[in-house]
Image 1: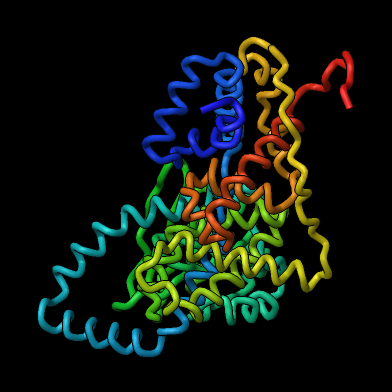
Image 2: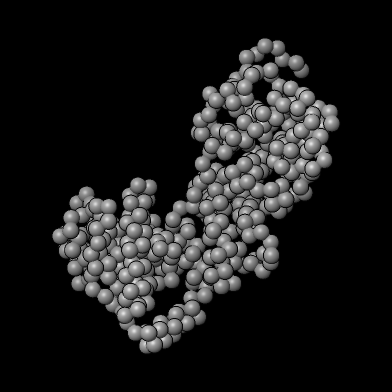
Length: 241
Length: 173
């Protein structure tokens, strides 16, 4: 193998795409030829340099939108099966087991929810739709999700609506409603959940307060750095509507 | 296609698909549109996957989506030049040291973005996604030999861009 052939095949060799025999010939040549060895080292250094560039990640709203699209396609049959399965399960096994399962799951979900809250603040991507008007925010979710989250402005209670966005939480698309209280942001994550309505459970994770309840087949998660009392007031206002 | 199949096939590669689209379009919003469009097509073309490699299959669809957008927008993308810049092997010492001063992600990213799309994408697919020539050939829809020569030319071009402005000693024509 001469230097011209090396120049031609060097990339394939580096990329591990050269057949065994030419690769062996290449190795022999590189051992013997300093300029080609330099060329090879330059190539490898270039590869390392390119790989220092971090890959871009798909935004959460894109993930949510695409997952939502996929769900919508098979929704009607799936929902039927889900309800049937839930009914059979509830009748045959009873409530106790369901309760254990859902509380075990709830810890992880609360973590996901807090992560979603933090992410929304850090990335400064709070809104896909920015509006204090519930009649603007609610229709925006149509066609983006396979359910319709209730959207109400709570300005009268001191928690004005600020907007909404799509999220991807706990492995499924969710609506995120954003409320403000002075400088504080409250994220309310909503997605469908089969099973009966529940009262409010309270959590505190990494300094954030979390309120969770299920109502009318929808799971609600409110997260904020607001103090406990105010978030309780918020949850009451939202549930009271 | 059921949503489960879609989720298992497409969603695991969503970040990679977005990264690829982002490099093709050089723009976040356009990349989102391209990926979204690709996913709609993916649902429609799902039978064409058969037993193939889902990532290469999805990437090929991403590329087609991007390409049809670009052609719709009337040839804004330039084709790559065919002249491969020859690497003048200046007898410098350590390649690492030579490149060290430019070890700056922003600079590399910018240099990559300056490359023609055909060069840019093979570098991204090979170096960032770690695809084999065969996979790249599937995505880009060219023969493997073309992948090989295009990669070599792309690397030549990139190292020329990244090289510090050379001291004009003497220019041979």
